[in-house]
Length: 443
Image 1 (cartoon, rainbow, N blue to C red):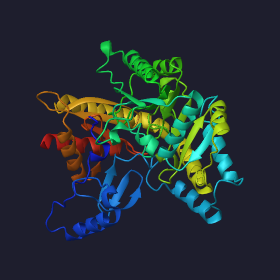
Image 2 (image 1 turned 90 degrees about the vertical axis):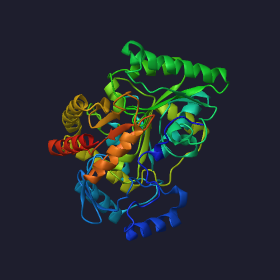
Image 3 (image 1 turned 180 degrees about the vertical axis):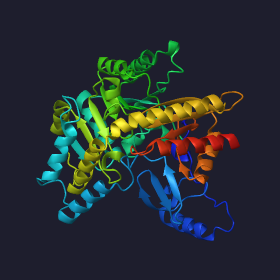
C-alpha cells in the first residue's frame, strides 16, 4: 500500500453538508452523486458553485468574490478577453480535426517551438497533460528499448492507465507497479550537507540500477520541474543539471513535465527546466497552455520522434485543432505583451518575502519554498515540528471563509500550494498575506 497522502484526498469534500438548512446545496450534491458517482471530486468542507471568473478572481452563485491563489489552469487570468476573443473567432470560422493543413495550427507550432532551445524542434499536440505524459513515456520506451521509469514519491503526472503508474499520489491501495521506482523529492533540508544536486542524482542512479537488475531496464526519469505535488522544491537553481547527467549516464531519457511550472510561472523564463540551465530530452505541457481550453503538447528532438513514429502509427484527432491553436497562440501573446514572466518574478519575490515574515511570526509555519508565483508553505505541529495536514486543512477552509482559495500538496498533505494567475499584483499579495495572518492568528 502506498504511504503517500493521496492527492485527491487533500481538501476534498467529505460528502456531508455541514449546515442542516442548506437544502438547495444538499439537493445539488445528491444530483451530482447520482450522475457522476464515485468519480465526483469537489473541494472544501462546503463546496462552492462558481459561475464567473475574471482576472485573479472567481465569483460564486451568490455574487461573492474569491481571490484565486489555487488554480494554475487560467494562468494569464480567468476569462482573459484576448484568449476569449481568439477562441470565439476561430470557433466561428473553422474547427476541424488534425488531418488538414490549417494555418493557425502551423503558426502556433512555430511560435511555441521558438521558445525552446535546439535541438527541441518537434511538437506533437495533444488534448491534455495526461495524454502528453502518456506519449512521452512511449517515446522514451521506443528510444531506449526499456520499460522502467523513476519518479518522485508524491509525484502526479496525470490519469491515463500508463501515467497513473508514474503518479504515486494517485495510488490508494497499492504500491507503484514493478517497472516503477520512486525516490525522495529533492528537498534541500533533507540532503546531506545541503547538497541536493548530489543526493538527488545519486538516488536516480541507484533506482536506475535497480530497474536494470530487475530486467525491465531504465527508460527514463520524469519530473515536474518544480516538484509541485511533492510540496514545491525549486532550489537551488541548477540542481537538475546533475540529475540530467545521471539519467544520460544510465542510458535513460529525461522528461521534463512542464504542465504546472511551464509558461512563465517560475519567473525565470518560460520553462521550469530553463531555471536549472539544463536541456531535457522531452518536454510535456498541458493545463495553462490554453488558459482553460483543453490542450497539451510534447516537444522533443526529431531523432526521438522519428524512432517512435517508425515503430508506432500515431495521430491525434483533436490534439492541435484550430480552436486550441488559437487559444494557445493568444496565451503566448498575452504572456509577452503583459510582461507576465517578469511579473511572476517580481510579485513572486514580494509574496515569498511576506510568507517568510509570517514564518518568523508563527511556529506553525515550517519551510517556505518556491520560485516566481509557485510557492509552498509547510504547516507543522508547533511543538514537535512534525507535518500537520490537519492544520493545512483548517487553514485552507478558513481562508475559503475569508474568500481566498488555496490548495494543498506534499508527501503528507501539509504544504499550502500557492499558485495564483500570473496577472496578480501587490494588492492581491497583500490581501492573501493578510488573510493567512488572520487565520493563523485565530488558530
